[in-house]
Length: 305
Image 1: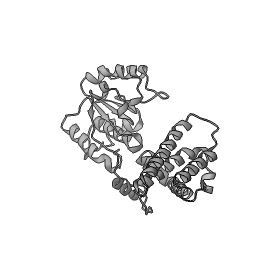
Image 2: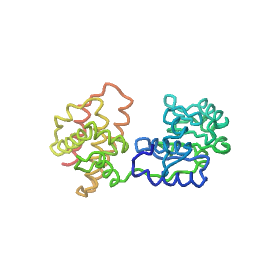
Image 3: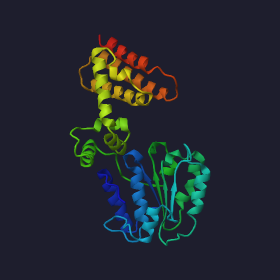
Image 4: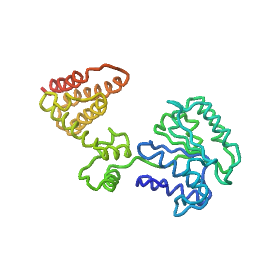
């Protein structure tokens, strides 16, 4: 059941120790995005809390509780996630009511709330009393992609799990263990993918190689002052990733230390424009992608004169 993600091991071991010692808190905040394994870690915690006979800090997989968890119908496990873009107050009230019932399997009652930052203010406020007084043998795990967006009143009522995104070294070691044929550092792709698990999917389906080609195309276009054929044929689906790559190329140039102060400032302004455009394009339709990309190359050519 445990996710084979090395950067989660310390948090898993800490949780397992609390479980063995009978010192689990009533509410835990898991500040790790789904794309980096946050949901996998939350599922591990829920399964281990519910397991009747853990083995080596892992759910045994054989007891009745584990069988019910694996079948997706454990009566004492409650999964809450957004209905559309929000977790609504009615959902939280229903969860709180369910947690008042006696545990049918005689162990923990566990609630896993995914992307809990999507709770409306009313929903978050409805959860506060349960976070304070959840009842005996009750565990609430709140996973968040954006913990900074949570209400302080929610954060203060949870024990925060100490877990971080994978380092570049951890990421590359893990990717190479999954894909031994890899012979390059792909940590630069992480901001584009948004997380380690998505990056692994990019490797599997060949999209990581496509991103490398797009990044090289930007580098050559800026150097020559002419938009490459690769960028001229961008699809609508590729545009957002392409702009993130351009931002990355510009950032790399700024960090190389080869620009004079004026050029440094101008490249920074261009990079800021690229990211602003990327955000605004999400709300727009019928954009002339070719003209937009050409404008970046022409602006870069002008400032480097």
